[in-house]
Image 1: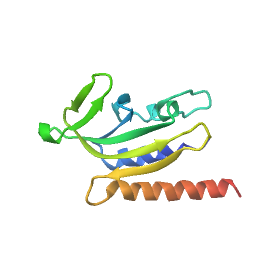
Image 2 (image 1 turned 90 degrees about the vertical axis):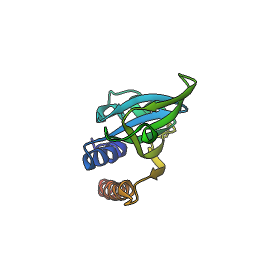
Image 3 (image 1 turned 30 degrees about the horizontal axis):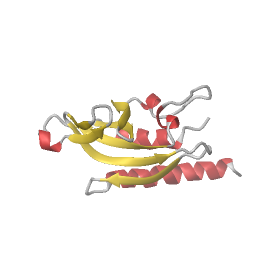
Image 4 (image 1 turned 180 degrees about the horizontal axis):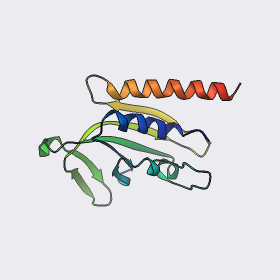
Amino acid sequence: MIRPYLYRLLQEILESNKNYRYMIETEGHVEVKPTRDLTKCCNLKSDDNYIGVDNFDECDIHILEYDKDTDVSQWNEYYSEEHDDYVRQKYLVHVGALRWSNWNTGVEKLWDYLDRNPAQKLSKIIDKVSKEFEEELDILNV
């Protein structure tokens, strides 16, 4: 079984910086708290059901950097339906986000992303992984 596209994207992103974490959020609900554990991002085995992004039609995957040298003004803040207020995540700085859709068609899709890094680090990783994944799919379809 080939690794899902999202798994590969997150794996490359997390490997690029040991302080990066990802968080899966949809409509103000954090479904996967900040983590480096890739087993929580999506279904990885044939008997997995509704893990990570596979539990939603669409969601946002936030890329956060853990940095103890930041102050409160830099910490990630998001609106939480659960708390009916804004929540600030201590020492976690928002680096970027992936917009994900999975509308029960069997086709996962990265449909937008945000890269806050001036060097466009996330953009380069996304381009690299997307190209490699497409090439692998082309080989399998031959």
